[in-house]
Length: 460
Image 1 (cartoon, rainbow, N blue to C red):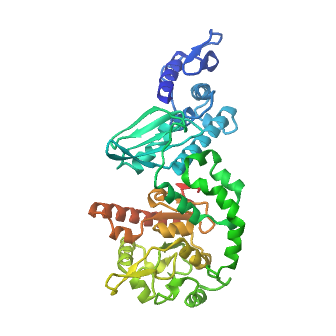
Image 2: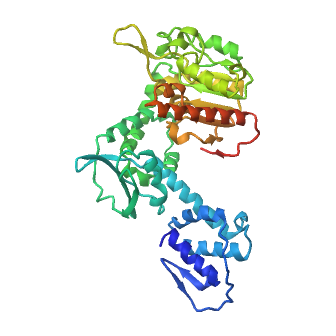
Image 3: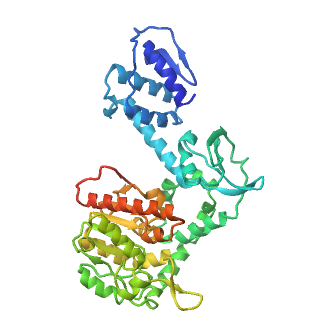
């Protein structure tokens, strides 16, 4: 039985006045002999909150879930329409706990599924195997249809499978991990990335297992390295201690003007010697609203100011359209030096994306700027800025439209497109959409900077 089937049967029982004690819900309700007075309902009322949480409870791997759902909907109609607000009620508490657990499981699915490339009748496709805690295949896989809609794929689990043919999402039988025996050359990419971000100084096996349960490890290629990395951690720590300093040392309690002067002399990263100058942030030192970009470009490096090149002009136009004066906010970059490579003819400097090492080296300057300005809202433009602010690899599409509140740097953090991504868009339609989204995010940031509380916040 699924959620829709349960709804239909539950509605007919409510109309007949069947009490929760009269039915035993398994795959189908079995009625006991009636010992209770029935209370028929002409038109049962199903609150919106119940309809939102119902599918999540129905997906829980909990034998009593159907009974729980019926008790709740019966009590909502016969006791109080506000029952779900009574969080101390045993049924409500159990329901909320299941909802939280299922949502967490869906989030884990989105984070830990690893697709492998396969050839299906000459066509490129992708498959993955994942073992969720709950029965979330139908709830968790529409995310992948939106995210990877341009390729056919299948996701298998022990209980069920999902299949996307680039038009519709269908579901079928499950598969054991033993039956799913597929390797992919991209597995090595995941291993390389994981090894590059592993920090032996922050090794905490207990926390690692809490964030990424060992039960997912067998289906994730990069986790094959965990035992090796743990074993090598002491030696890597010694190597790090003996290595030259790769992170800026920023004195405390300095003004922005003093920090700008000190940053101009910073030679920690190799790009300090190849760029014209350090490009520090600028603007209102008491701004409630801060913009953080990626790094200076060629024009910024020559002028010594952030966001003055083509991407900066696009940003300035967007700010002006929204009535935001540049001098009223603070604008800076996650990385303070222009990282570049020469063009083929040697006549131009071509922008080169900052690495994790570059972000790590400059992070103290960024944190010091934020600590001095104390903005209420930070909008991070682009992957580099968002990764530097949040401390994890960020994909813009996944974080846009969210307001992140659980961060020590600012009350509210928003992630959006860097103007350069708009200039490099695939086509005019893509550019127009990204520009509209950037303007929307800037407007949201402005509103949050002048309001006391975010009404649409999340915690990450």
